Length: 466
Ligand SMILES: Cc1ncc(COP(=O)(O)O)c(C=O)c1O
Image (cartoon, rainbow, N blue to C red; front, side, top):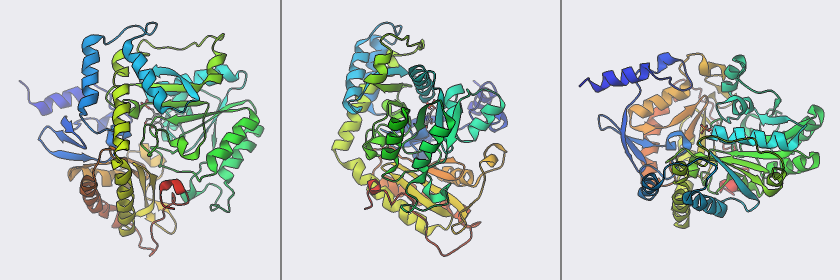
């Protein structure tokens, strides 16, 4: 039997690592087990998971109820073609209807957030034909294939554009990024120009079919718009006969404290996509949901879309229990208490470390934005640095944390604090203690301006602060 480290290297040599040059995919960490908020490597070392893997393991690892449901379905009937219906699919749709807003009542099932957005594009472009343009925002990520990458604002699109692997007809709007307002204005005096400008864009662009937003931006910064933002956007969409599409692949399924993030604003989109939390990452499943109005259009029109694995029984099998486990958890009041505790710990941590420019978030969805200088907000790295091979500061912090037993995801200038919703207060303490040490790496290169960290989410009463 060959040595395991050799087999890992050989496996890596025969697979493509994601989102990077392959020289960085030589000896990935072998994870052998996980339980609750922890996972373990092959040496038995324990890591506390502060990002729910890719912000998807909402119920933590190895939830027995969800695992049993999957096993039961695997034994009963793992797969039939999407032209048939399975009992588990009926159960999954019934369960989804208990969490989705009533008006989003028609679903398409696929197996990734990317695929959910591809389906949304087909729906909206057919429905709005001949209008075809989609307005997205720079600070966004929507997936890895032609449509979803074209909607994406972050540098992953730049690469895809160079490789000509994106679709056309996508334009980008300024972000609702109060910490670095693209209009150099301050809320509330700004009168929410970032939302109002969309009306100008739609009228000047012409042929706009939809606006697509992550209601609370995920990987690109946990950016929370002010209370007026989505009501204004909804009104602009209605006045201009444009669809509003919410990508809740990451923010959905209680990540922000509500089933869907857009519900914090009491606004409804025409199409909503979601994935990750829908199965709490136990199976690869994603959902594209539309209003009945969009659905009615396809009564006569061909819905020209599908996959071999659409409505996959095994993928759907995690949905009913994932939903009931989420609901049970929130009925207990524990995650609501823990998220308030998490917020306070992050505020304290941010005050202590001069490298934290802004701390923002809601529920279990937080960002620490790392800067060199709180006054000038100068970042350590640029977006372009992300794929240049340069070791980014957030990567150094996350790397050090990992050595000390804390897994925290990083994306160029922010650390993604998105623990499983089951994390207890003492587990939060454990994670914060490790992060506290790792942030010193950036402090050493930051300028002490005497200013406190900004809390750009605080204008929003939904962050629980006012
Ligand atoms: C907001 C958002 N949309 C879409 C996607 C793509 O989902 P997937 O990686 O499942 O294809 C992601 C992934 O992180 C995401 O965060």
